[in-house]
Length: 229
Ligand SMILES: Nc1ncnc2c1ncn2[C@@H]1O[C@H](COP(=O)(O)OP(=O)(O)OP(=O)(O)O)[C@@H](O)[C@H]1O
Image (cartoon, rainbow, N blue to C red):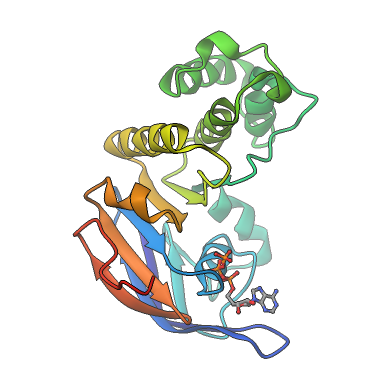
């Protein structure tokens, strides 16, 4: 479970990125986080991953209190999260299989478990036939599916997808959202940051909208309630 309680963030140059944000995402939830450019979406993601600390307020992520967490515990907290970015961030010189294996070796998984899990996640994202390809041999949508598979290999409780469809055409974007919906149905909590209004409107999901660093709406309607956003 994720909780932000009255969280504010001012950067070193004085920019007030978030003002008293409170947000709760239950285990197994699916949430779209939407808002215009500069509204504070990435700041929320960075706070959740422990990349930055809040100026005030409390943050809990999957059982870790980020206000009191020791530096040595941050890698363990991060293992509860799988993060996906707009630009995929795959290792270009490695094959699909090696990209996934690398992420699992980094946390000390046994070779037997790696083989089993890599096969499972690649089948889940529909890329089991591409395991020997390098990223440059794949389409944008396929590369994003590899990035999703990599985020899933270590079995995180939650996937955070930061503009996962920003580089994809509408059909591929919809397929990626369907895949994230399927992953959510299998039990993983999903937070998707996006500005793609049409895409959000195709799903009936909780939509949290932020503007000027504040939560301006939070509802299950599956559409932007605030026309300005
Ligand atoms: N490292 C930083 N130092 C100073 N100000 C920052 C920093 N990072 C972000 N900001 C400012 O904080 C505010 C929120 O930025 P943030 O990146 O969270 O917005 P966003 O909603 O993710 O925007 P976008 O959709 O364009 O990525 C903006 O005013 C931005 O200029």
